[in-house]
Length: 169
Image (tube, one colour):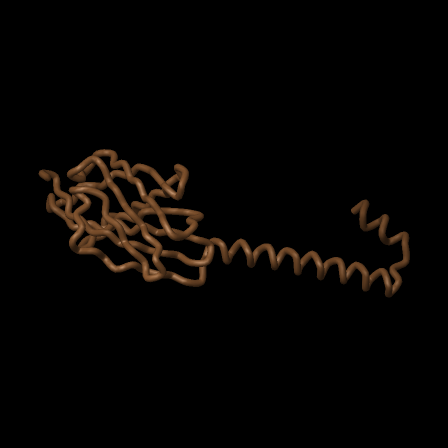
């Protein structure tokens, strides 16, 4: 109210109106540019999914997915064998690319087990670590897919790894 009263005491020439309109337009352009850049970082254009390596067994050691461009994503889950309802230590080593964010999505292959996607923390040298817990399935045995999701800023890379877990491994 005070501002409106102050402004109304001064006549608005066409030049002042044009200057204010130009300033408002400049502010809108800057806000749109910053918003677009942030959105692009959060939603990369390209999604690349690696092939599942059926020969690797996470119960015996780390597994790796090699990407067509030479990048590599290695996943290690401990303790072994992978238990249900106990904390799991997860380590992901990235080579051949710079990762901004790394998550791992655990999903049941044949049955939805709810949302289970911890964000891993950077531990230096493109190593990311975190914890998760797998819920128990009513059948007692279940095939799981652990999808490592790497955001590089330009692309979202997904490396799926499959393993079976049961209450009596």
